[in-house]
Image (cartoon, rainbow, N blue to C red; front, side, top):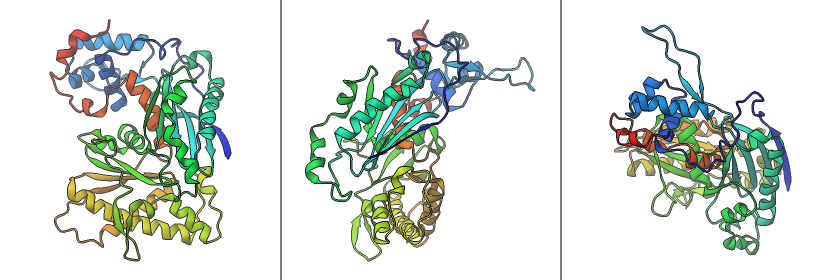
Amino acid sequence: MTRSAEPIQHAAANAPDLSGGANQVRVRAYNERLVLSLVRRHSGLSKAEIARRSGLSAQTVSVIMRSLENDGLLIRGEPLRGKVGQPSTPMRLNPDAVFSFGVKIGRRSVDLVLMDFVGRIRLKLRNTYPYPMPEWILPFVIDGIAELEERLTPSERQRIAGIGVAAPFELWSWAQEVGAPQKEMDRWRGVDLRAEIAGQVNYPVFLQNDATSACGAELVFGVGQNSPDFLYVFIGSFIGGGVVLNSALFSGRTGAAGAIGPLPVQGRDGSTVQLLKIASIFVLEDMLRESNIDPKPLWFSPDDWVDFGEPLERWIQNTAAALAQAVVAAASIIDFASVIIDGGFPNWVRARITAATRKALDLHDLQGVVVPEILEGAVGSQARAIGGASLPLFSRYLLDQNVLFKETAGFAEQNNARVSQ
């Protein structure tokens, strides 16, 4: 196992006194959540804009924003001048107001991040292993949380809202593909990840599928904000994904909507295989071994790959050809506006896969298919951990995207009486 730690950016030393903010028992009232969510989505809004977009009265908005500013959750931006009348002052989320931990559990590595209120990673730890086992992962998470807490001031520690864990469903599956003993991996069947972590920390713990978490991160913090309907593809050890409809995550009956890995596609040799057996990083790992290239750098730091030359290019082309088939199949069922591609690799690899997928689509018979726009994701390799870290924030402070897109006059009028005093 290999462990690395990297400080990203320490919380500002001159942050306002927010002691007790995140750990208060009181959950933010609905209208407060609505205001915070609107401000987050638009990167800052004036009181008048919030009133217009939410349907709340100007007086209600003033009361809410005064309360949120007093609590340190909102800060004032620079006044906007140049228009008739008094200059308006946009209010923004205070990045230092709330923090949360995000945990990504993968088949080759585990990441622990500390994220601020606007989605920036402040601190992170990483551990790699040949295959995931509870006795390696759980101590790393518990000890890592304590280690990151030590880097914070007492005031900052009081502003931690919780822990969000992003992990694959059925970790015991695909043991053969990752070279793990099935008997060892079967031990995950009796492990309740959320309960195991919650029993050893003083924060609320949330659990979500890793690909769904990554999709949520792209929806909230990435290019998904501008696309109401999209198929999200995340290429990790195994490829996975998610579906967004009407600007909201669609998880389906069992929570597996968008899990595109099992989708049947045609390989280069003409045989039909599952998408994950072509477009997954474990496949590239095998290809590198066959070329006598050490694959370990794939897992040490997903943002710092070297160019592995011909095996990497071959994997990219095979992945793109398989993804193009998946795009055609998905677009034939749902009229997606876009397909967003991201993964556990550097941005330059993502750009090459995206470009190759666009090119591979030209080789298909597209009659009757409205081809979605193929876009690069914007969140990057930490999307799963960021999606996990966002779970405590949405649980306590924010509303999900589908609520925000109902910004019509009258939508929130019925909630005016519920304004928090």
